[in-house]
Image (cartoon, rainbow, N blue to C red; front, side):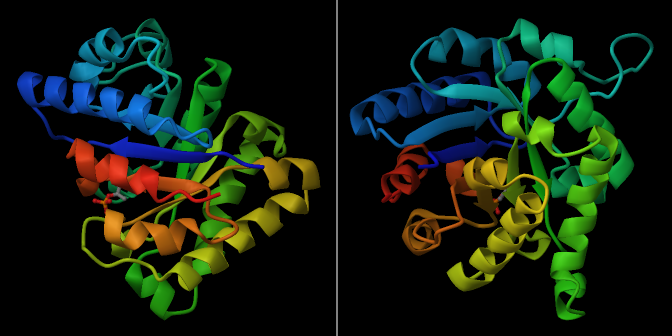
Length: 254
Ligand code: PEP
């Protein structure tokens, strides 16, 4: 049975003090909830990774970064490399979040390159894919998602690397807007993603964790997380309050 992942993407939010409180709250709550089938992850801004590592330690809550550079080192002002993330014992890294794609011009090729760099460094990439509202309205949802996935599969020379990767389906129109995909809309895309992988490797497809992201909150989580191909959530706004984030995890019912 696939485990759930409940992951918080804190985006560009937090202060030293608020981050300390949030980390302590999540750490305590995750231990108390002690859900055998949930993996907890937080994605703080880079500057808080040190505090995150010191606070979470071996608590069982994992952490990762929101982005990484495709380059190893050198004259790339403002960038952060995979080896820097390794120094802070990040286990995961977000790759291709829609805000990176739309606000910072990350195209499929760059996202695929970052995915490869993450894998080569032993980081687990959480590959984010999803369509815009205009694309959905034109009936292009699955075409867009498959194009984004296939750019990575092509560069990786197959799906093998997805044995150590996670996929997050995040419809762009649902991110930060308060609009949820319905459980059925999300399930339809998740099932299509799994089917795409099963054409390459049925065993891998069956164990691949596919997360849903887009305005997930504790009151909408239960129905979405009950869908058979949805293996957890990538949560933005609602991950900034420990109680709300933990309540989403409590909704996991497999
Ligand atoms: C996200 O940032 O990945 C996200 C899903 O944000 P929100 O939950 O705020 O829509």
